[in-house]
Image (cartoon, rainbow, N blue to C red; front, top):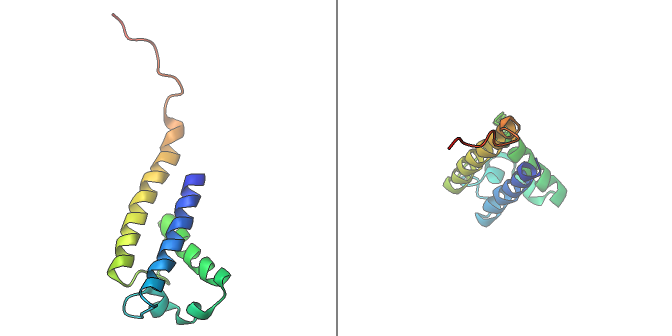
Length: 107
């Protein structure tokens, strides 16, 4: 579970950093296109908005109010979704694995 939380945090930071690297351009970033006032907001608000996106994306709900605009953001989203599908499969499927290897093979 902690790996999933770390994944959500890292994705939130990367999603914000991509927008910042592109100078919050409305044609290339989610901040410029969907939340232009967020650039001047307190750091806590910026992190919360990014964390909101990554949590909703990781849960595969995807409300659609914040979505990737540029190609770099779209690529990050695809990678993030695939990684989180793999993590969630491990979290859900892990307990179903046998706790012991079973009887030794016959010779």
